[in-house]
Length: 103
Image (cartoon, helix red, strand yellow):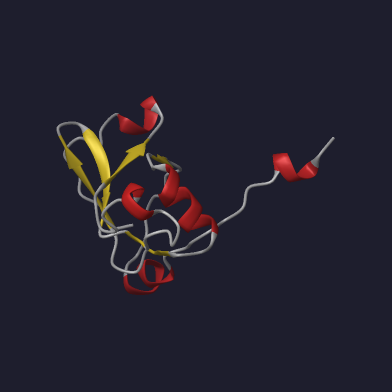
């Protein structure tokens, strides 16, 4: 067995949110990203400092999350501040349609 496949690696953490706010609930979510964004995140070029989540048409998005452009990405790079769709489990989506939470 390869333990590397079973372990989860934390790439970024929003420490400021835990310092400035009282966090009641946490959720685990995936993020819809493009290839150059993934490469940039693997290099640690992501900033969650002023990011938060918002709901739009029943879907949750990460707003204010900055992913620096990948150096070799040329025309495939996306806007660093674009909103990124969060991929939640169905049970976590229930009751979240009207909320706006800080990450």
